[in-house]
Length: 458
Image (cartoon, rainbow, N blue to C red):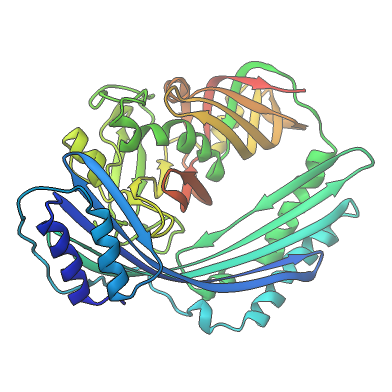
């Protein structure tokens, strides 16, 4: 997808002008999306994005430029402009032919070859199921998006690799309304797969579950407030670890000493029940990668093992600052963004308790079935998360639903306060925004219990 001779010329120019390191990231990305509201196709779009980014290191500084004009003359001019002010001795450049990665993330049907009309008809069944669930459902929306991304990465150390990444995702949203209130239910499954992913989904069940959640919360009483045990269900419950702890384990924070976990490798930072992992190698998972956006192979990184901090997620630049090797954790939204350390599929591993054990052992507390969004201060780990669907637990049983619940606390304290971890690990799909753009990730965990969290209500 990118001329190897041109890549050699660009990188040689950078080395000749004194760059300590130079890296090319070229991309071709074909995308499409569909939006269906109340059973009618509201919008359908598609397009192609392509371009190249060039990153240079010099004496600990970083220069980054990008362009979508891939003509030879423009790319060489762009490189020369980026090198303005560079001085130093020439450095040898080791360039090899492009290594096309044999990815394990196989695609059976490229989205661009799929019948989009047939996909739309299948998607409509999710909205229909949600609408049929209750007369209280006043709006349904179903979305679909896909991308076929091909990347070319080469640098002055001889790395030269290409990779193809195909992703599909579906979103289902149901709104339940009364005279004075509205509540929503939402699900957004996705995969590192082609259009065949649609046929792996029970769209009617997803639509019905979104409607059930919205209707349940519409009828629920307000959540009481106070400090209490909180049971976080599996799957998207892992968003708290992702946000309140995961970002603090990225080298982009650690290298600046802007993380509560900086300098704590080998120390106990969590309950001995906790093992936390970032694994980019899970086949066809939404957040997986074969190579990261610096060309390093993705891997399974154990971050916390039995409560002990074992490592961080490290990219090349921050790894240089920390004197630590890269861990295949460098990601970016597109060629327009400078890569940095980011998560892939990040989860708390399974424990030994059953969900039934956890519920039965809780005399009084909150059961957070589905988590929502929130805000986090990465340097302190302080968080505030909404709970989309919650219930009071009383005498070891799940009782009445409650709405308006929020969870307030510090990630480092929550890790230490986890006293039961379930055996039902599940991953859920989402998007993560940070300095290098918005990228697909998975969060996950089994059901677990935190012995005390501040719960905000209405």
